[in-house]
Length: 185
Image 1 (cartoon, rainbow, N blue to C red):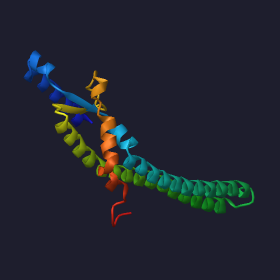
Image 2 (image 1 turned 45 degrees about the vertical axis):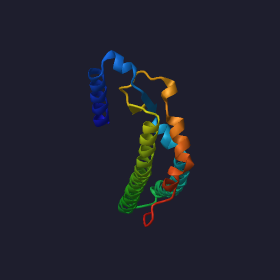
Image 3 (image 1 turned 180 degrees about the vertical axis):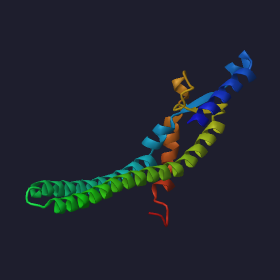
Image 4 (image 1 turned 90 degrees about the horizontal axis):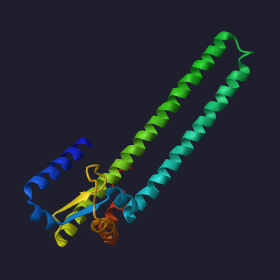
């Protein structure tokens, strides 16, 4: 994030100092919203649907494990008065091991989901950037900036290319992102 912020600041400063007032008026700068493109394109929606299935499966597995833990804890509390101190400690230790396994399961699920989301994004971004470059050249833009960058404080809404990028991406360039990578789970 800092790298992008620094780059954007340097780009903005370079543009300001490099251009005279009359040249600056002739510049054509476009804006996109990469998050919206990744979210609203057909490939993005398909990826979200895939992620939702994985999330629901993980949630179901975690809920099942939570229910097992709750039952174990309830049984342990019910048996507390009839168990010897040593037997109770053994069952409590067994419960703690299962609880740590549950915590590890939740952490692993979160890490797996984050990696899957990163992989999807990493597949889509180069395709989107290629389209941005093509539209930039066709539209004679001097620059196209991502609105997610906090350095931008003003932009002409008519130069927002997000919808055009989504349309182009939906026409076919993003179709390859919707298919899972071969040989990987």
